[in-house]
Each structure stands twice: as structure tokens, then as C-alpha cells.
Length: 391
Image (tube, rainbow, N blue to C red; front, top):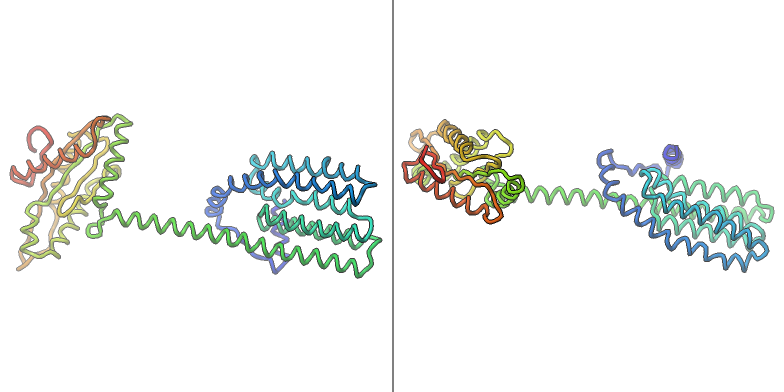
């Protein structure tokens, strides 16, 4: 109900008819990021705002000695308990209720000012100054939601205007002056809080944009620009992470070290541009053959690739390696120099390990590299495990 009234008020006042809210998903993220900070701010603010408000009892005693008992009742019996209750429950309520309490908490103290300081002209003038100070201080310090601020300020100035217009001690000039003053202060307050909230939300959008840009830069820095697959930097980080994960789960991890056969001769014969195209085609074939999303392909350097196979035994890794060899053999390479039809094959070294705290992923990678050396030594276009016979 209060949210509808606040939205209605923003529509009635053309100058303040601005909707600062984000789309639902962004608004939800904004709320989650700022919720605890706003709650902590409110609770800490109330710790010194309440004693500061009650300290004005000394001024009440000087100015309103005859009704000092009533002052005690208003400040200590009504306003202070309400403020303490708000502070106690603020972390248990939803966003709308929380922002409503942020905006409405100062209202009892301002109502108390109108009740207490309503006798003579000088007392009324002092009360008006105190009301404006409380309004400005509470809005700037608590920084409530702009819509709820509109609602709270509207109630404040409307109530104060009604109080002034019906007071017998004030003539028309005095009434007009006081009402003009409070409405001017209210307008400036709303403009300021609008500007503050708008800037806060703009800063949040800038943080989101910066985070997205940094995320994209981080992603680009781990991608090989030629083949489009992850690079060596990503491989090293991912292999360590997958090793630790398999160590925690007690699962086996395997790697395949892949090398393009006779790639240097192909480069020398057809040119580096042709060689780059071949690398891209091979990377595409390898990536498409690895159907499991957990299997990770990366370019190790030059014409070498590595495949990380979490939760895979050596037998399973060898079966995947065979599919990779078949996929590369099936690549239809573009015609080379002189119209000759080139052909490309790969050699693969396979290694597997059950991670333990006394070993690391580097040793397994070296074992796969040693197996790859054996595969190339035994004629290339084949798969060689870290131990046992070739396939």
C-alpha cells in the first residue's frame, strides 16, 4: 500500500516524476549487494541519533519548563521506543518495509516538535527550524529510497502546513513565511536525495560494466587467437584445479598430449598461412569430437594440443584418443601449393593418475609428453600410453 502511495505521489509531482528502478533482475542484484550495508548503516546511525534527539530535553527544560513532563513522555515514552523497535527489527523485514522504515522513522520526532513547540511565536519559530533540521539530517544521513522519501516528506510538509494554517498565534504573513520555508526545504531535500540515489545507481551500473569488461578481458587472455581454444595459461590453471577436484573426490584424471605429424614439413612446403589454417581445422575437429563438456581442449604451444579428461581412466582416455585420431584423419584439407592434396595425422601420448597429496599434475603431464615421444618414435599416427604397448 505504501509503495503504491509513493508511486502515486511521484506521478502527481511532475518535477519528481522519474523512476530510478532497474529492470527486475538488475534491481534484485542491486538490492542483494546493498542490503547488509544499508542495514548496518541504519543501525549504527540510530545508536547516536537517539541519544542526540533525547539530549534536547535540556532545551525543552529551558524553553518549556511548565510542560517538561509532557516533553519527557513524548521523547522518552513515544519517539525513543519507536526508534529502538525500528532498529531491532530492521534486519528482519523485506526491502519495501525496510525502506519505508528508513523514510518514516523521523516522522514521530517531527510530529513531537509540532506538539511540543506550539505556544508562542518565538517557540513556534524555533520548532519550525528544528523540524527542518531534523528532516534534512534524517534524509541525508539515512538516505532512504527516493519514492518512500517523497511519501514521507509529503506527509511532513502537509502536516506542518495544516498545523501552521490553523494556529491562532500566527497571522497570514507569518503563516505564509513558515509554510514557504518548509516547502522550499522539502523541495531541495527531494532534489538532493534524487540526485544522490541516481548517482548511486549510476555507480552500480559502472561497476557492473567494469566487471563485465574485466571478465571479458580475462576470458580473451586465456583464449588462443588462432584456433579459438583455450591457451597454455588457461591449461595450467585448469589442470591444477581439476587435479585438486579429483583429489577431493578420489577420482582418476587423464591427459592426452597431441602433436601434429610432420607439421614443419607441411609449413615449409605450403607456407605459414596454410599451416595456420590446418591448425584451426584440427582444433575444430578435436573440439567437436570431445562431446563431454567436462573434457577440456587447450593449445599447448606450436602444433601441440592437450586434452584434460577429469574422472577418466587410462582405458577411457585411450578410447577418446582413438576417436580424435580418426576425426583428424577425416579432415578435408584445402589444396596446397601446386594443387596437391595434403593430409594430416596426429600422434597422442596418454597418461593417467589417481591424485594424491604427494604428487602433482606436472608429473602426469610429463608422463604424457614422454608417451607422445614414444608414439612419434614408433612411426607417428598412433597412440601411446604412459605404460604398456601402443595401439
